[in-house]
Length: 461
Image 1 (cartoon, helix red, strand yellow):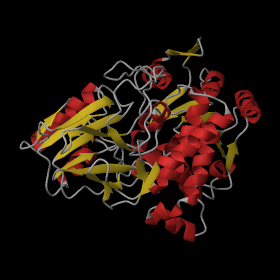
Image 2 (cartoon, one colour):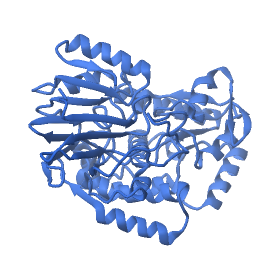
Image 3 (cartoon, rainbow, N blue to C red):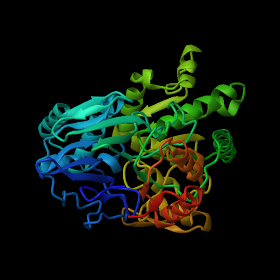
Image 4 (cartoon, one colour):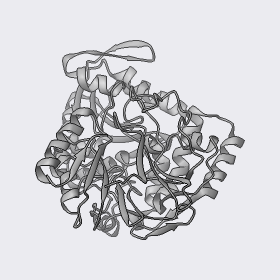
């Protein structure tokens, strides 16, 4: 249990799933206040922080003078999007992350700066140079002593996206574990999650704490079925997908379907489009980090297959080609799979596709990830089957497209996976704190964990 000398403070991802930012605070031997942050993410949709910060209020509203280091679990924007504001507030300490994350983080932050901070190339370059100086990449499974903070940190694979990690912090003989975002088993390209040997306190995500995902084989079959139906309808399959993680997983499994159906004209003729410059950059970086791929993915390479770069894949970089593609597909309804960001339809190129294709019954919109409250994605997902409407850029659009959700593509562990993560800890925690979930998800997971582990104090902060 956390004693009176140690304190965990949640600055985000406590009343929802975005804005992840958690602080471990303690008094050192001189009775001075010390702290370490785990993640510093952006709020999305209608979600807010404890201090009232929302997606458009990015200033750091908590004291940071005592913060000795930042540990990044992974590079999704809801875990790293406020780092520019943390540095602007005066944070100059080390930023620890896995080695793959160290390659991906500058790409994420550069994009975030261009969208919400400045388009001045000189300022962006200066910021990225500062990030490079502060980054301290770590190998998985190795304890790192943080001298200024007088504690040890270890990262372990979390199976969420490439480079993702859960964090173990050893402080005064107490091991405190921050799960970050845990992935489900059999995630394409990634090694599975292995639970820690010991944890005294576990801060556990609960995004899908009330749900069970489809199996990988089932989700691939459903993806294939949706695409084939769309081809019959002469329509477009539009997949709002996060640039990092989800896009690469989908490409991996689309390549698998194409390979296994090489004699089928449907799959030989269909075109796959990545319309996101950022997703294209991430995909190239994923390819350069092959040594971190799992055995299945590397085996495909030895067979001469290219799961992230296949013949029918087209990448769109410039804005002019993007607009031309949207107009072409709206006119012709050529059977095409389009992957475009953002994953929650809150901005980015996917919005132009939605405005052009949402009112066409031949269009199929496929959601493969969590849609936060207050996002356009959540509205389309909720009201689409009943021919509802959504507001995009101030204009009302009727949802005539078919709307699908494949839960198995979530990069988050489901209820069973989360329980197994706890079950496989040899020396289990005395305390579990549930964060990073809607109230229903946290409550359902709390009930289930209490049933399975009545000796553990499981609670919702």
